[in-house]
Length: 237
Image 1 (cartoon, rainbow, N blue to C red):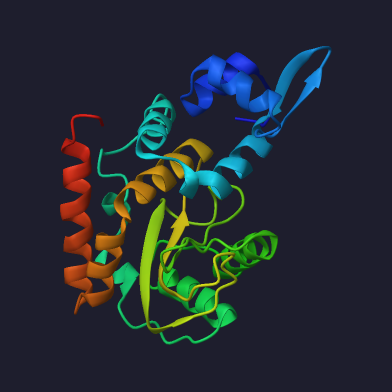
Image 2: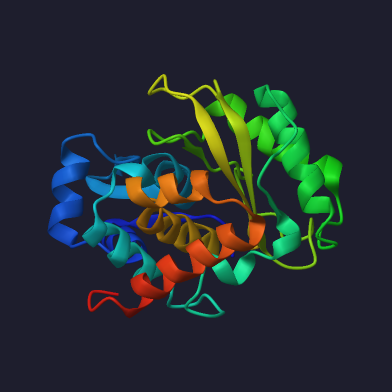
């Protein structure tokens, strides 16, 4: 679907928010929109970029609403995250100690899944995304991803999970070290945003600590599956 301008009502529906709340935030300059002829308009590409950068600030209710709004046309299982992770895409001891080497090794890990067609293209895309703004979160986690979906870079969407033996500086605006990485590669923006929202719901402090302490890739995957199963079964979801 080509990117286009959204009305205030379309924007509210797209992100799963009440129109009145959207109008208040827009009037306060908190949203990526502009007034044209007295009416708010929102560029969908800018909205997607804004959501990627602000996702970690949304509370549980907003994340659930966003997931539901993205679900209207997305396909696939309710296990959004773990359904995209295979054991071959998990590395509990990624051999990297700089941001640049982490990105290279993550793409190499993706290549070993057998799903990736264009390693160079994906690497360039995530490098360019990191140059814009670090994908590091305030809990020692980073979620590298292309700025825009790349439907032709892989056979199907996937997530790779990697952990460093020691945290590194990854450009986090929160000035903490990063040691846990989720590389996301989706084929459309709705699934991408829905997957990001689900990850935010999974990666609370206790969850991150358990993933850091896990002893094997099998344990890492099982921890994620158990957590996502609880999220899927929660009454609010």
